[in-house]
Length: 123
Image (cartoon, rainbow, N blue to C red):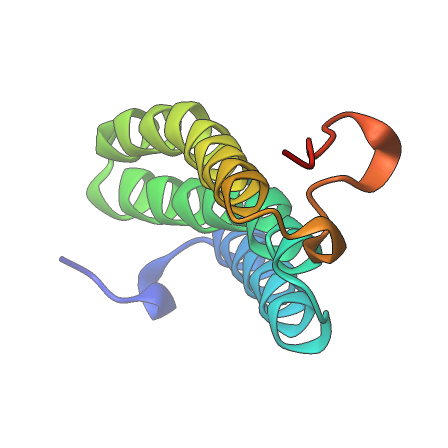
């Protein structure tokens, strides 16, 4: 396998830009996770950015190995499809579990009742 110094300039530039873009998006998601206060606010940072950030990193990897090996490398496509399909579903299920946990514990101030979609019955 050859190093990045043996890649054509156009491929090295594109791989570098995709890596910087992906790393920046993931960093923004991590900062959102650290800075926001409640669970319902914190889940949005990683839930939204993991798909685009990981996708950029996987496309950069696919481009690098395709150009370096002079053959199409499609392993990353399978990984990308898996991430694109599972990440939003997992985030939604985690959020729903938190809402139901808060509703069962009758925590009205936790954020589960925001937007008046769910109500807590006082029985």
